[in-house]
Length: 236
Image (cartoon, rainbow, N blue to C red; front, side, top):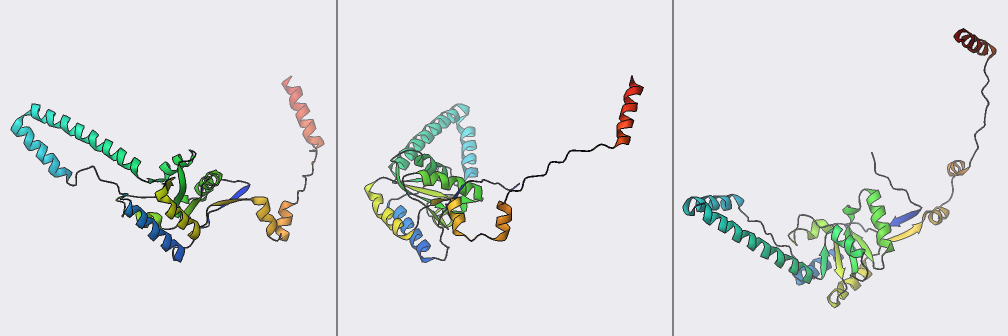
């Protein structure tokens, strides 16, 4: 079943084509900004998990179960330390990554100065309509760029990147000003106003015209009345 969301307001994301010069230029600017501020996710999992398991088995044979349990405890402590370092690192970033994080920050006042969403994240149309209505109600500009995930995900060591939010910092003012020159934020217009701009066709007039249905009283034939009366008498 196709997802459908009807609204009296139409959302326009003003998405430029991938071949457009403004699209490639803003992607270059975003990439340079994130690289200069060292925004990149670090992988906490080992590159060769099979070798790690083999090493643990060898230690288990040499030292016994007691030493292995100690090493496991030390490993848990190291994981917790790495997690704390990771959280503190992301808080120092001038951006927040991911569509869920960006929507969460947009819901808060005075947290972001700009947000950029990948055009593919707005599909199907019901999702784009819902996010567009929410983004238009925010006080900051929200842009949609084609090719954001494809260009920046690998550079930031991520599996996917569907949105980037820029915090209210002095270091972000230059990229916010650049985006305002190259892109157009999402806008919302009333469906009635947009419909009035178009010329109405005869088919539209027929659809708009309301014709009440004719009420007809059902007529029962005399033979059917006799049969019903006979059945009623037989039943008694």
